Image 1 (cartoon, rainbow, N blue to C red):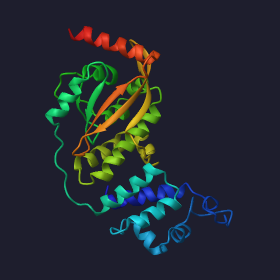
Image 2: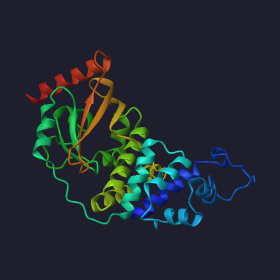
Image 3: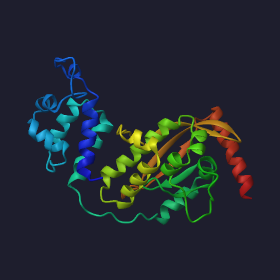
Image 4: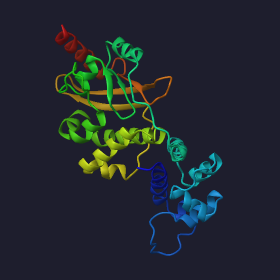
Length: 281
């Protein structure tokens, strides 16, 4: 997708969820042809002309200022994550450069290997597992070969191996929306990544759930997420994943999964670690 189109689609999705009454306007006619706020209603509130805002939704406003974006975000009632996403999309619409191929740094691999009591993995901007420890393998994709050259892409697993994913995640739908938010964040930061665009096209073609959820344009900060996991040998665990971004910020991060100390989930995670250690001997 052309970055300008992504910007326009996001703006339209957020405009559609507002009513005139939400921004202090009269609802006017009972039967409106357009669901949500009209462009001619939004533009004056943001301090721009209707023509300028229309061009912005059409991806033809490459030099839009941060002040105008903030004004539009205010009118659309965007939260902090959505406002940041709007700014990234606007920058992406100006970008044309290709991105470098994604390669795992040896130091990141060593960091992942250093975690022995909690699941940890290195994740790329497309959702590829670049490295993982045995606990992450046992928790998230035990049906994959831990030592295999090919490792899973967690977005593909969640949307194309739905039988497994729906059993693993207590709230699969929220996990799926978080996956899309992760990809959308990467698309806004790396618009020249052809592999990322190809992944979105593949999932759009193969997964009706992906198509439907992506049409909602979910936005979320994926840095810290608490989620329920079902494991066939130890039961249900609530774990919080912390995504630690690499200093060069090329879209890679290290995800570490932890349980609340002293909780039943902590005891179950400890049992899983024992099972993994026994199997590895």
